[in-house]
Length: 164
Length: 73
Image (cartoon, rainbow over all chains, first blue to last red; front, side, top):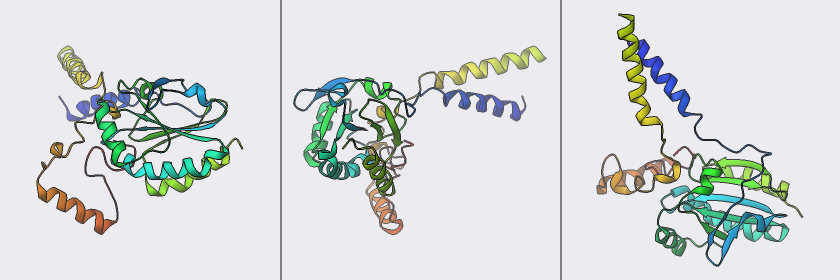
């Protein structure tokens, strides 16, 4: 069997793999969710009319740890103008998330989604991922990963879309 | 001759499908992100090396499944 045929088979399979995760496109309605939070349920519908920064995180994700102080700043800076940061935790064990939160405080809404149904609905492709949802419930943009160099662009997108 | 080649190709494709039908999701890598799961093991030298790279290159993360920041984990 010639090596070139094996390579073609492998290429075809890798091509099939890329289509599996369906990501949200800007303009789509953001999927609703209703998950447990730190003090009551967290529902996306409750934040209709606000600019919602939905962030998917987990306790084992390094960039998530670096993004939390920045998200605290975002909430403090833009909260009055209608921004709400909603961080959805995807840890399988709640105690891992609680342990993370005890050392890295979150001054915004945190929801817990251990069976990752929300992550699946949002087509999360990497950790962390964030989705900016407009006041009308539509997706404005999707961002994967978190680097210091991303902060400026993300802040600019947020300040551009604030409802007030 | 062609039938045999086609059969081998079909079996190869079917065999590879066992790895790809249910791809691992990004949030399912919690156990893999632990320091014991590092390719080089959880030796002290690994931590020292990571610290050296971080301080010399001014680039954090990338050594484990959880780190990096590119969103490609």
